[in-house]
Amino acid sequence: MSLLAPIASRYPQLVNTNDDCFNPKASVAFPATARGAEGDHPYIRPSPQIDSRAPCPGLNTLANHGYIPRSGRNIPFVLLVRAIMEVYNVSLALALMLTIPGFLLYAQFRLNWKSIGPSGAWSVPVLSYTLTLSALASFGPGLKIAHRASLVHPDYPSEKPEMSMVHGLLSADSSLTGSDEERGYFTLHDLASLRVSRESSPSDKLDTIHEQVALGESSLTWLIFAKHVSATGSPGIPLSYLEQWFGDERIPDWWTRPTETIGLIQARKLAQQVQEEMELIRKGKNIRE
Ligand code: HEM
Image 1 (spheres, rainbow, N blue to C red):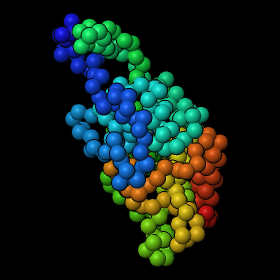
Image 2 (image 1 turned 45 degrees about the vertical axis):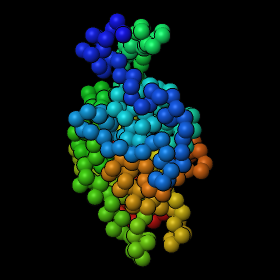
Image 3 (image 1 turned 180 degrees about the vertical axis):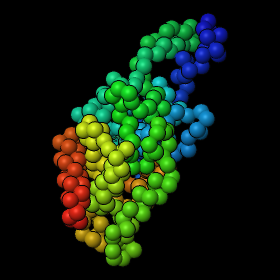
Image 4 (image 1 turned 60 degrees about the vertical axis):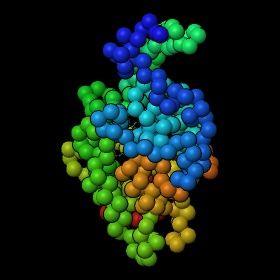
């Protein structure tokens, strides 16, 4: 029996190595991301009382599918970088660019106890530097990533999407005309219009850093989910993807991760494109992509 069992029972958060992500096999066997092939990573809705979540659909989805600890707690840096790269097919440089600021701002040193010896008779302390998702929900003062002009999160620290905002987002393509199939997609113009409307009230005006953060989030959303729409001949994001990813924070049915790795420069260029589209919308030029 572990000599540190009394500490473990008193402070379970210090010794939580039972989460399925600490099983090294859990995130190695990466399946195709279409729902039928969830494999080792089924979606499990988080329990608000138990699980920790962020205002980030990207990270919450990883936790809801068990690519990172489902508890949303004590996430190691390397595990998160690897999960982001594997699930969303982003490059190492982009994954590091997303993860390093998050860790520098919100991660904590923790003392974990690791069982060693025959049948885990002994426990040794192991220092780790890990992230807990709910930390990301905090707003300033100081440099924080969360801002007041999110697409589906309210103007106050929140760990889950606001469903009325998700529904608003899904109806934001009202400018679309044409067949039902055409209506079922979100264009880059729709995304830019939504950003303009979220930043339109003076209280939601973003500073330069958060403007870039928000553009980066839109750029990633587009690059990960947009696909060619045969009805229109141009790219779009199926509304069903947005509904499931933003609303349920799950890997959407029938979505497959981008076939080509999304790089830093590509993400930056797309963010710039969204920004230019936003400028045109603000100037009243209703240009479509
Ligand atoms: C490929 C990986 C990722 C994707 C696709 C992604 C995507 C997104 C999106 C679309 C939003 C906006 C949600 C909204 O507007 O309501 C968001 C928000 C956020 N993300 Fe991520 N994210 C990723 C990785 C990360 C990482 C690694 C961190 C930090 C460790 C992070 C931290 C945040 C935070 C703090 C917010 C809240 C910002 C706000 O107030 O809107 N994300 N993310």
